[in-house]
Amino acid sequence: MRVLLVEDDPTIAARLADQLAAAGFHVDRASDGERAWQLGGEETFDAVILDLGLPRLDGLSVLRRWRAEGNAVPVLVLSARGSWAEKVEGIEAGADDYLAKPFEPAELIARLRGLIRRASGRTGNVVRAGPLSLDLFRATATLEGVPLRLTPLEYRLLDMLAHADGRPVPAGEIAERLHGTDSLDANAVEALVARLRRKLGDGVIETRRGFGYRLAGPA
Image 1 (tube, rainbow, N blue to C red):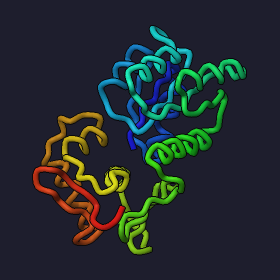
Image 2 (cartoon, one colour):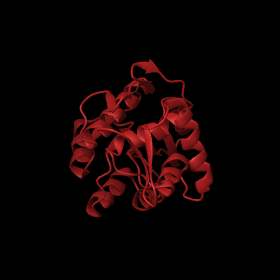
Image 3 (cartoon, rainbow, N blue to C red):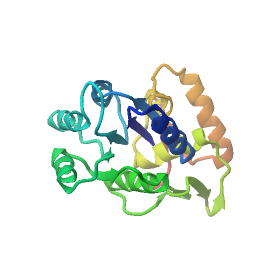
Image 4 (tube, helix red, strand yellow):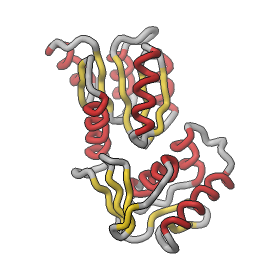
């Protein structure tokens, strides 16, 4: 899952980015509102963590611009200010959830996963695709009940394919969402898929020539 972290405090941003990465997220960062607005319009994210007190363009203005442009990405708003009036203002601007600082990282991650689940139409912590099960809370996977030993990159790829609900995902989209760029060589994506197939066995990941990769069986 790819998230955009918008936070101008470098210490907080670095710590959060590390914690999110450890939880299985790919994290892109922006430290000002103008950059956040630009990235949100140009890139595809599963969710955004948006601080309100940003330089160049405040967080509420960024959020209002996205919503006015039709960008429905799930947004978790962060703020050092916790007044009810500000919470209402953030929600009216289009926020999906609100978390006041200071907060526990585990709570932020749980809320973020909840936003992504709801946006994808899922209600539980476990995503199943045929014999494959992904526990989004623990960032673990099993195949026919047997735990899989996956690298963070392999897990993120499986998570992406499972959330595609049977849609073939092109190699370029995989590269962009895993690495934040579409310049990754297609052969590198193919090598990652091949490595994952060795752990999953034949028939779990299908190749649709000219379309991309998909998980076999009902998603």
